[in-house]
Image 1 (tube, rainbow, N blue to C red):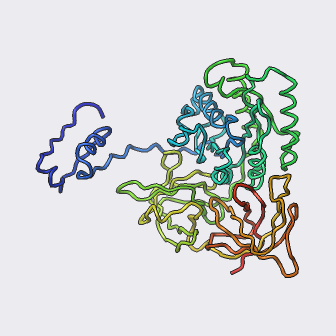
Image 2 (image 1 turned 120 degrees about the horizontal axis):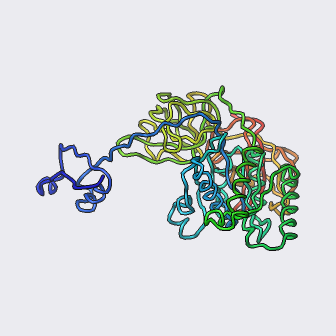
Image 3 (image 1 turned 60 degrees about the vertical axis):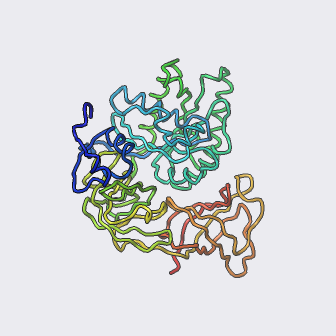
Length: 444
């Protein structure tokens, strides 16, 4: 809103707090009045009319994974730039994607960031995952939402520790299809070195259970595309990558017929309206007005109603499996919502404290433990978007489990979590991934 604020407020009213007065103050005036009068004046910003999300193309969740500083966020920005020129995206610069002050200050991504764009045939939700080792926990949350991924490897470095760890975790959470972008190609003149990096990546993909022979690998420079330099390594290579993603990453099959379930990634509150819970819908469908339950992380089950649905700031009448959803719920405080909980159809899931699992324990060479472990070992169990300390109980007669072994054992969680048979999880100890497993039985 431009121009003059046409509301006079008497100094007496301000002294005693404005009572029984309805004011609609838009834009910068809210900040102005807050600065002048602090919290004596409550204000409500007018809600702009939301666009409606149109479901005219299939939706695919994709993400950038790879080592810190290899250019994942720069590539994400370059994709939005190239597609914005064709009208398929809103251009988001590096600073718009790394939008937390700490991220900008350190130049690294901490939380998984969400961006949307579309090609001629598909609508994409793009998750930019952090590569820094300290933030692997947040990367697991991002990878758990992906249907496919773009592995970013700097030509100047080749594969690095988080390249390997991200591939392991992506495979573990069910990401089966990748495209690879060898970035910073403008900084390497040696064609043989580029070939060597590509060969090394194909071997690595095969080692971690991906198709090393058929996976598309594109060499280019995301920064050149962003800065409109050297189109043969910049703009043209980004276009080639987008075509490869469209062609190589298959449309996911969505579980639309199963009961609704969405792991909680984050939450925030809207003054006067309620709490918004965000996440990627794992299965089923949710409609505006549906009853839902919030459970997990040791909390009591909370029953509530979905009063509004949004995807990328556009309103929805219904959310479906695969959607990155914001769900406005009634009567739930933000502090009651924790990452790792689930929002689900009433009575369809329950929090469990004990389960049996089949787990592969990583070898030292795979970044895992150096020594065996015995009963009462308590690693952190990462499942869906949450994590919980879990104590291992080995079967009678089984004294220890060696790195490299496939083992079956019971897990007792520190607090109940929404688990089900067949659910995959990752075990970590400190900063290393020590095992990957699947739940085989729930113990009531």
